[in-house]
Image 1 (cartoon, rainbow over the protein chains, first blue to last red):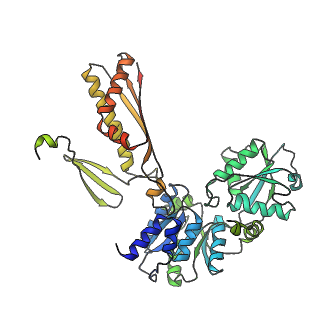
Image 2 (cartoon, chains in turn green, red):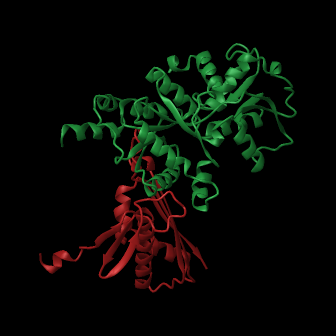
Image 3 (cartoon, chains in turn green, yellow):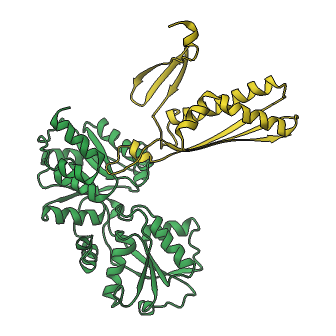
Length: 303
Length: 154
């Protein structure tokens, strides 16, 4: 086996030592005929089906694309920075990390319509006696995974702006489900709600979409729980590229992406699975609340 | 090789005309398979893992029927469900950073048979069939948590 192939093989094993070896590998310049390599973090094997459908859609529209799956966003960003990936489907926290790692040179090129202007809710029991944020002083708040933007970091930032400091004014009961996947898996968020429901916390945090979904499917009894506070709007996942990603290739890839139409029944199933009705251009104006929370918790330094 | 030494030999030819599809031929009988394993509920083809589950149940049912016949036990309908769990399916998908193996960590076969013969006699036939079932005994060596139980309805 040649030197080049050996290093690629080591990197795909995914251990830290081999990933560092991988960083020394020099990739050839991407050309229009070569596949665009997209990275995605996989928290459930079923998600691979969505990406296979998207990959086939790109192939059928003349834009070859390969998908590489990662077990966590840290590894995925290493893949992006080292040149193994052209595009990374990043969580909002992974977007901030990519900017940190690249000195602010990465670009956000596309996102789902549903990634824009999300909010998180602080939810309390209707009869729990918590009527304002001030009532949470001295209480326990159930939060999602350590690295969940929507179920931990942004709510911590919101409470900070309301004058409550984590560890001083309130304690967190944290549900670290699949740390490294930035809260993609709703398990931690649901565990936090169940903690609230069991009376073991005074409040919990959840994404607005989960509040809606859990109200609809009966997980949340509307007569027993209510929203105490809602955070400022924030943006969620975003396709991220390095500064040197070929502009023509990027435009071609985006043209195919934007070619998906919810009005087309063939596209609709794929878009429903991915949870969107329209792809939108990437924007960076919606990461303020998370940027503030990351600074407040010194998240990257503490990692 | 003398014929006597080849009795245990099983031979299958497999062709793959398209990605995601392969056909196994044994003595001119075809069996079409899809992916190694599938996570898509709407996948139109049986995966190799699903075929393996079917094979182990078919193996146990046929061996059990053979033993029952040898003992002149009357067994009418038999049905089995198989549940198999991979240790880490993400390894099969090539997820960077995942560790472990996509091998089966758990295999559970539950068979249901109807018989008017005494239950203990039928259950003994089942127990005696287990070490005679070639696919089952093969998987038992490989899968850490493998169980096969029979429930009888009169």
